[in-house]
Length: 427
Image 1 (cartoon, rainbow, N blue to C red):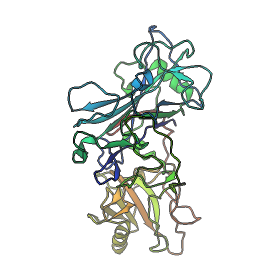
Image 2: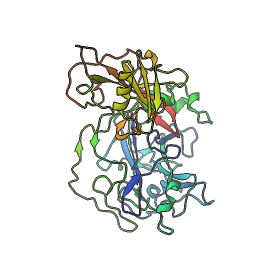
Image 3: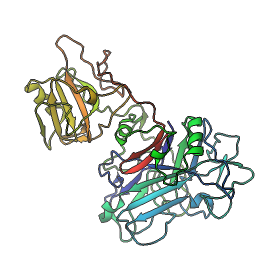
Image 4: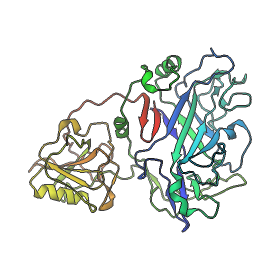
């Protein structure tokens, strides 16, 4: 798959702490994503061939250290749209007025390639914006003759929920790289496409509606399938809640002079952060099976259930065990379901981490499923193996494999998909 990235926006509270700003429609900041558009922007020749990104290609748009406007194409390609606010044009910095419908951060990548280097040390020099007045349209310069498909990112942040943190007419927002102006917004792209598939999509998917369903070249997946296709965090670092400082070595800077890269020892280590289950194999002889699905009209577990504001993994397992059931499932932060048989079509699938991302109502350090997603635990058989599903990280050293329902996994994502609340291209 391709990698798409922009820095996280944080709010700086009046007490000096920082917290991630969620995206519009995702107040718990667990299901949102980023809109990545693939746009067919040609030059003066409307029959000009647009090219797919080559294998191994990567690039960056924007400059994480800039804190003022550069008045060139690269600077103009970083912009903001204030939704539901004053009827004002887009800006190149974060505006100092409220955006009731959210602040949309936008990154437009250069689309002209030198035709030789799939990457350069600065991840920029092999690319150029089109010549002329517009950064997002026009012909390519002679030294960068290969016109590629245009790539455009959007992230819609729910900034209006923090109105009480403004200092007069000064907004309280800062990106994770320490940029309080917005000029330092930037985007990263690492190509992972099947090149032939992307080229066919560029050539053949020309419907003006922009609806991905009208591009048969691409394999279609549901939003639920895309939410389930996750990876565990690979940096053991606290990056949510109220933080004393921004993650990493990123003091708040701007406006004015360029920021200077900082060196510090923040104690952060690479490695899987925290598993999304609780190890009960020793204490209760229950094993974590994985993250499966559920359906309100056709439950995965059909035994007794409850919903509480103090739910923990242990309380749900204890409840199901006391009631004489061998399966316990936690869902939607505080719901607990019991059963003796797990509906196979909702069982966890090998290769899919699942959408169990919600913190338990009774313990914020534990995971209790998600929306239509269930954290499934099973009572270990007497004198039999008792081992957690460690596919996406382990909480204890075990060797036995958990037996899970054998359900065929879908093929690798290579399509444009709709993710609430935004659209995202996955390649």
